[in-house]
Length: 585
Image 1 (cartoon, one colour):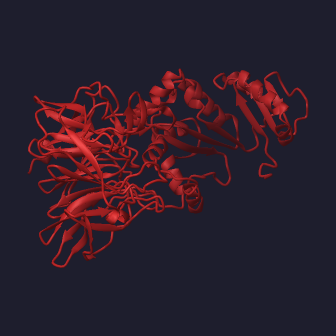
Image 2 (cartoon, rainbow, N blue to C red):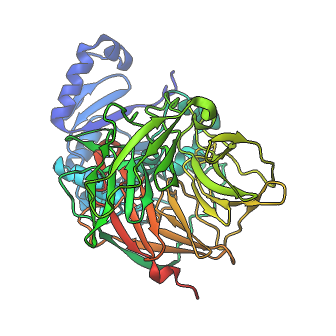
Image 3 (cartoon, rainbow, N blue to C red):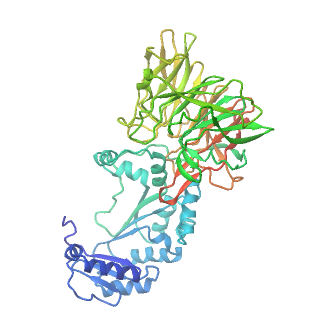
């Protein structure tokens, strides 16, 4: 495109790699023509290739004296404007050597800019998986211990002699620095449903720009888009300790995500669907599993299918609503992001199931006639029981479909015949969302958070409450404002809305437990103390069940693909005792 007409590019790599690159360029006609290969051996002993406006140098960046000689021999002029680009390079060097390189660039060049792209946040669950991956490759990320976040990296550059420095994580960069039409183009390239993994990856990489001696000053990260005011300090009201509550059995059936768990009987939790580990490999889950309290402890068992010929269709991101002690309704879900035409299913489990024997639970999936199917052509939605004029309905809200990335519509299904009902709804309509939470409360439903149309987490909380002629949406004000999040779960107890885990863009930590007092709007955040666990606790794409008598919260599954660092699935269900944070004051 001839945008670098008056620019010379100096590429620095290890000598062996530089030689391989030089050989490849010389053997490839298109590349040789692009850099105008002169056929000369180059300038200096470290120059592997020299073209008209391209020099390839074979030298170890960590050996600063050799680098200076190599650049001087290759003709680099330190008095003209120079841009340094380091894309996941410095982090592999010892900090003393990378610090020296940053300082040398500031001192030796009169007009300089620096662009740095690297990892950060090493100590949260995703960061631990990331660090483990690079350690296994024998390529530890050395900068993370001393420079773990954006603030530390910015301070580093100021201390090394740079006068201007801006830094942001890649979630903020994508939101604020990528034009909206380009964002939409990328989002429309192919069916996509890995929002959690995308946002977590972006929260663990930053882009930094620094400069000195530039007129006018070089500040490419200054955004025209206002950054949401949710990046202040999190004032934690306390913490809750996470304990593994079921020994890992020979059946790893609860290592999954995108599933659904429902309390079908006292102390019997049925988990269906999702993506996880089965028969030694990762796949969409075919088997049902129960978590059952037996002889005082929780145990995991694979569920027997009453009719083995009736096969589960391996759906993810569906909902399961228990309608009686022997019947549940499955709504929506998908297999792939382009296939969500799965309809509804009944799940039948006999009333005579022996609650004391965890091996004696059977479930039979039964296809439902497609009478209510338009409501089910979605996933990442919610299905909640509501009451209108004494009659029970299922309220299906939001989600996404193969056609619409965000849905804001709703349906009422009358129980037990599962027929459409038209009930008037008034009030301020919530913006469309998926991956939100929904809880029944006082015959209505509480909707919290979610991911909106702009692929940004939402902070709004709505109550759909019964009126004389229908329902009305009502905004629930919270103070301080709820930090936007999605992919969390939620429960209501004694007038308090409890949000569990999820994904947010806040740079400080990961979501734990948030308690919203529905009478006063007071919003309190609590950390989850996972120090007793031997593995990272990832609380997104999980399920949770609250046992109100014991004030015990059970967390089942969760995790997912961690970019190129591998897949992490929480290996055990987790128990949280919420007595201390749900006690009325």
